[in-house]
Image (tube, rainbow, N blue to C red; front, side, top):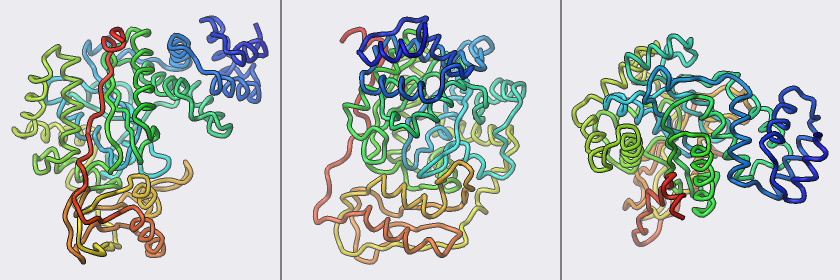
Length: 436
């Protein structure tokens, strides 16, 4: 067996065997396959595709390429949620304490952001003292006693994925659903939780712009989970407008706190309740109706907020520091005319946030935790000329002109109210795939 044979085989559209995929991943890890050969193979995959079975097999060996945690051995029911990314997506910060308050353990490994905004880890690090680098013992102890912990991904979690993604990123092979699915799911399998919910975004601010493509990705990932004996489901959710009112790290943590206090019940709240509903349904084997009521009650009773504070305290964070996280420079953006907000382009809002300092151009860039955007008006709202639509937050006066220009391009004001946007486009489960 050699890599030239595998490149030729995949180039002709044939499926590879279990042993051939194992050979490929091992060759990537021990570098017996040269980078240029790996790149040629990835291009063949990108052009010719892979079967569900092949994708599941590749994912399995990528997961086995490094550390594999067995959280389910310690916590028989332990859940995880993964989002494919979005603007203003702080759902993990909200659903973890809700689930913990419902008696469901959530042991979450998250990443940093590269691009528009910070990742979950960046958001949490905007809280003074919060540690995302816990020892395995401390991580497990926090999950056991609080019910939830969120830490940074270990360097040796699915290392084959890191090597493959580095090559995909520079060879034009990122946009392949089997490769995207295996990248995401290899880390989920290695994390070792019993139940996984995938939040697959679609729309202007998502990687998957079209609903059909997002659905295909969701089906692929659920199929991977099924073949690897994991309880996995996916929901397709909207990312045509930012989630909530805040975009930016400290701003988003403050908004998560507002949601958990029960003081904001908008699309962000509804999405978080939807995510919790599915995870409770999966993990506690209760009806969706009962699961939804349970999730809502934790917020209304204040128990979810208590868990939020407990989780932050357990990981060394100072929740009171949030109120002091204020950008030194703020710029209000006002409506140019009377009307209704008919468009908020998520991708442009993300670019504006990046310009203000809330994201990274390169991995080594520092983030301004106070930077970002806070909306006073949102999609569908009526505005009068001069009304404040949003406030830009930054620590650098020099970036404001460019950020303002980008923001103004992202917002459209029309004469009539726009049609409401769907929040959920569909759900994929193992059972729905079997019934197709």
